[in-house]
Length: 239
Image 1 (cartoon, rainbow, N blue to C red):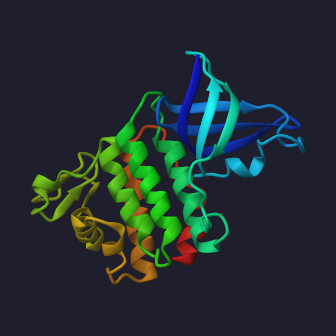
Image 2: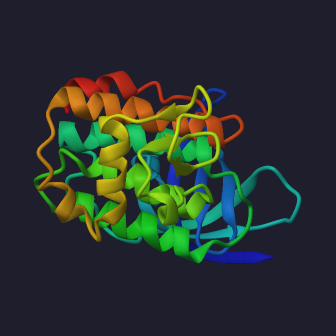
Image 3: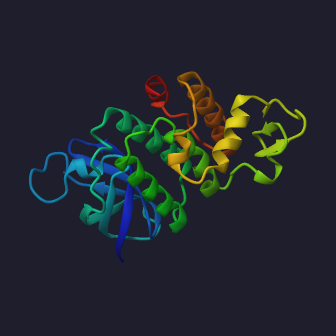
């Protein structure tokens, strides 16, 4: 069948001498991987390696076969022309981190329009604004609601956050129950409506680092196979 859909590039991997394998999160089919034959040596045609940088927003046309691991692209064009995401060193570091998080956390091969729209709107916002020091913190909190393990807000009056069960509790029940500044910050971020509000939080580099480590542990406990991003340390050096 012919597949026409919007897509967000999650990752790309070199294959052989000239090929590229690109993993995308598509609007119509969820996660789909594509084999791009000869693209790394080709100097002709509209498909260029630069189109497949992580978190690029695309419109694609492909020949799609069910139960096949690798699909083949026929046409590709930019859906939204990103201006700063891959050129600004701070934003490109955030992009590298977010792409790794998404690669480890999104596995579904089915349509999830709400998640797709959340990702697209978040990336466009990141591309357009200047102040982004707390963006990644708010993003990974918001993402939990689309992945199915958002902290239970009905219990947020309690001080201890139980990472194993994703709930706030009155007492410390296990080794993954925390009552500290990270639990407090988690509650604050959960209440915010938009990324702009997160920028108003007065956080220093040490607090951002501590909270990010806290949330990565939560992701590891909730998602089987989740790997802590290799770019985490670089991100924490910049923010």
